[in-house]
Length: 107
Length: 121
Image 1 (spheres, rainbow over the protein chains, first blue to last red):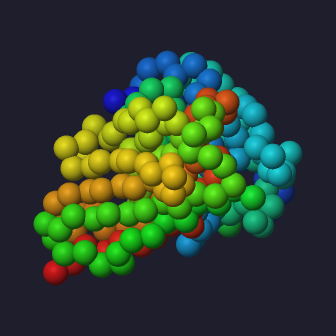
Image 2: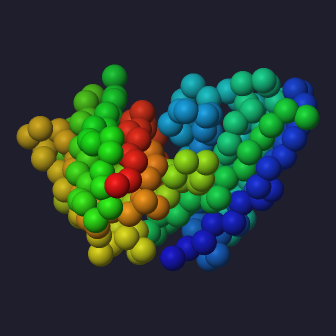
């Protein structure tokens, strides 16, 4: 199985900050990497698909980059509604695997 | 509008078999670009992918759970069913179904609200 290692596991930031979350795959997954945001009590929401494509309706402050084994999600000018947990997901091969999550909270 | 809605028992006993249904609307399970996956999340823990079924009926399973899980579909009813046998307390959590888009490199673009399942005697 492909292992997805997300870092950091948590971070504290202030409104207006730029934050970057990374995800590393244990082998190359090309561009088959997606990012999700999850708030307490809610289902995950797709933010970025295929490493860098912004899902419809998602604010432009969210961006993704990377290919192969190393990927990142950047949130520019963090807003109060962005405090949540973020997950990466690889769909290059089965079984699909998620990262362990990154919790972004208020400093 | 695309929606997915999970349903099933709230409480199951250890060793019992869990059957969950995902009712989809707004898209067809016969659409070659679509599939459905099941994902679960224990309380306070990370997401875990369980199983997938594609529009051509091809199925795939989590390595650790494949001996206990079966996924199937009823296209006439627009439903995808997940069956998990020999339930244990560690299987407690929220179970989600999600639409998979092959044109998005198989991203899960729309999720159901989830259904909480507690395993307890």
